[in-house]
Image (cartoon, rainbow, N blue to C red; front, side, top):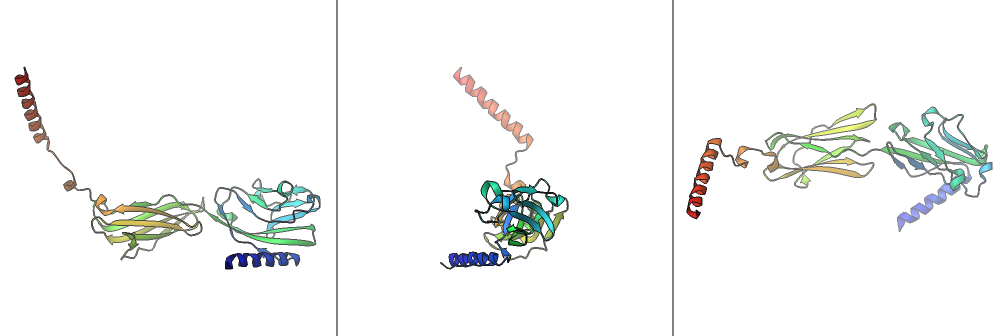
Length: 261
């Protein structure tokens, strides 16, 4: 019961703040890299679009504008060309749709709106960006159960945390310092964790890649007995023995044929 009350108090504070032209900071909005995200700014639905002044900006950087009935992009920063859309007339909202998200779009955005430029209300929206990682790849130290195990995940944002479990419990070994590599061209991370361990037979080692921002965990498990690919685990028949067996079965078949004839 306390949480809904807290939200009501926050909404009331935002309303009072807007009356005094004070910025009201909304909850963080999370957008996925490469996709689009809506930055909310619920302006007065009764406001006539032909009398509305609307400015979306980051400090002095212009993201998009709508001035007295028309979208105006003459001062729009080049980084936002063909990536923004306002819904003033369609939905009577001052919200901004931002597409083709990249890491550089993570920022606090300011929505200024009003009937007069000198008396505008303001809403701040914090945008956080994120990206899912690929399924982790867990590698064992060859045919041995003792050695260095590595867990790698790529293509995510922000930098992930990798956890290790042995039979669904914390491992008795501490992993090495993780290797975190940033791809400058994409702005995404590759993360590798290495664990020096001695795994008993039939135990299960699991690595978990945690993206805290998206609250997504990806895991990969490895059974220790599956890493032991030794000759003892297979039935090996030498070629010479195989030829003897073929002769034996052929002789038996000939005897059976002679009896039936």
